[in-house]
Length: 157
Image (cartoon, rainbow, N blue to C red; front, side):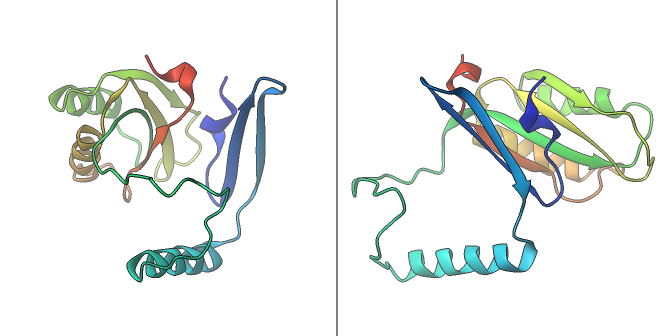
């Protein structure tokens, strides 16, 4: 049972893994969409202006930003409940070379507003983007798919 798979809505979660604490998960309410959007826009503007203000955690200056990488991915889909959704997800993933590690679907309480999570095996981010684009075009998908790389080393094979 992975505590990060149950995080949704405006809730934030951070998992810290260390040799002393093993794994600790911190979960709490997010700042909200406007404060978060404001911070994101400020960060984007700072990057666009080549702002040289100190960065958090004092990273080295020789960082490379890459748009192409392989990772295990967390993918969350909101959907309108119907027959065959799991099968369609599997077919879409197969078409784009994405292997599914696991699927979590909590019991559906609102047929028009349900969600589930797919955890993938290690794949290129371009494949996940293609899967999301195709799934978002299906009539049962409600809104954009959310995906993010999983940075836990024990998930990477």
